[in-house]
Amino acid sequence: MFEKLRLNWKIRQLQRLKNQYIGVTYEALREVAHETGEIPDKEVIREEILNTVKLNREMDERIAILESDYWLDQAQRYLLPTPNDQAYIRSKLDKRFSYFDEETLAALRSAVRKEQKERSENFRTWATLAIGIIGALIGLAAMLKK
Image (cartoon, rainbow, N blue to C red; front, side, top):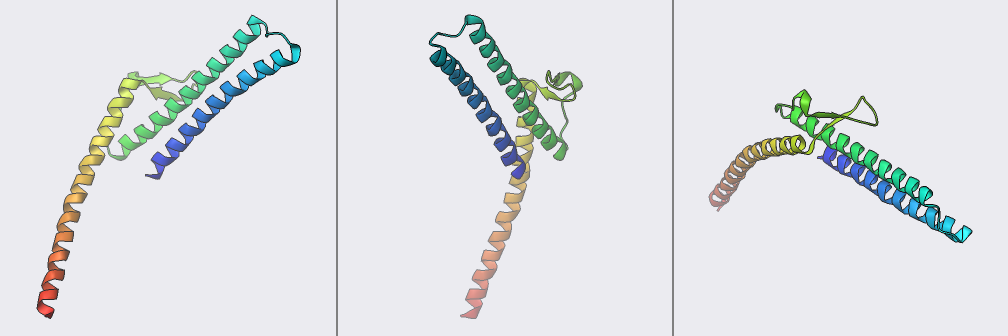
């Protein structure tokens, strides 16, 4: 449970960084325009936009790596079959890392959630039975006490 919270926290941090960088880029261009009294050169604007796009792609790739690692760990935890080597996409940032394409990730998520649901159904069945027996024993004890 805490693993999922940690994953969501890391993803939200990366998304906030993306949004902050876009805002900083826009503010920097606006400041240059305000200080010089001229609109920045087309080439400068183009460079800044390309840098922003590149950073956004890097952040998206980091998010994909985090998600892929999380769902792969979950699949291994539940002893589910893991995707084959062709499903991995090598990271452009760091060749040590790889992530899954959307189709593979969706299938892996689905398999893990199905397994989690099956396991929780078994627990709920036994928990319902145990609570029923305890309730019957308490009722019986109350009747015998009168």
